[in-house]
Image (cartoon, rainbow, N blue to C red; front, side, top):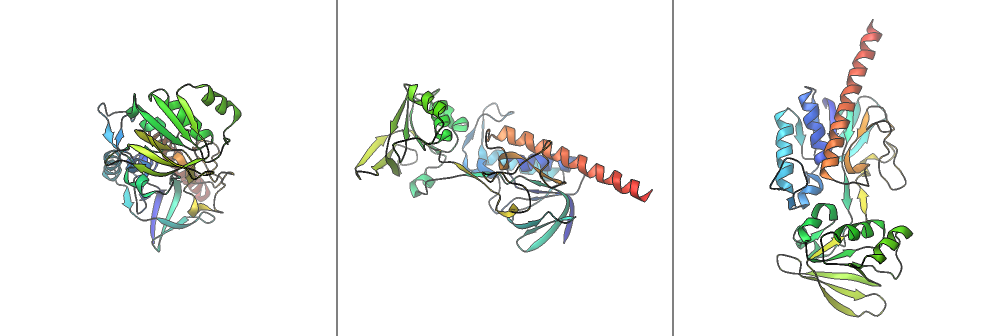
Length: 314
């Protein structure tokens, strides 16, 4: 059993930023990165909106640099998934690949995962015209035609944002009514760049090396049609990665971790950062900022515990 001052679960921008700050504070730090480390940016090609890179940087390259920086300051990084946690007893216990690790404080930063259609062509062209983040990738589709899949607020927000760049945005929805709020529906329907394709699903995303179009099927008539486009944005929702934390910390009705003052969760000494509780912004820059805050909160908590222990001894 290995004992740490701070254990960080997750290795996206939030987790690795927290590791950098914890490592620089000279506390014994563990990062349980997951078997697929790096978070959502590992699925992103060009990143042009993260500060400090005037010419942009590839998503995987950015995460590799952040990992090296965390390791430089002494953080131990293990590429294993967390199977279970025990936040009821102190020190906290984390089980990964059958091995138990303990920590005085924990930062959970496992993020959220975009829900995908599950098409082989979607996976093949991910990062080559297929995206789940208009804010991240919309700039690359200037004067292009794009498709947004979905019918909720997220889909309409993505579509409206994309009208800043694209010449046309087609929203493909499997029903003939939207789930989005009335105000979002009104905004989208008034926008002349947006058109709706009702009662339809995407059966295939076509293209060799890049997106060239989508094959659609009308769910009522079974009619199949082709729609040329340059990009496809999947906006059918996100799923917070909280499987290991069920029953251990408070989650909201969507399954996201509830934060209280700062980054504190419902369990004293357990902190949260990034998309695991932020379902609004979902940006690398905001996640990094939250990782910084969570680390500073965790370090403050450790200092408070030292003071309590010293006072008790007196």
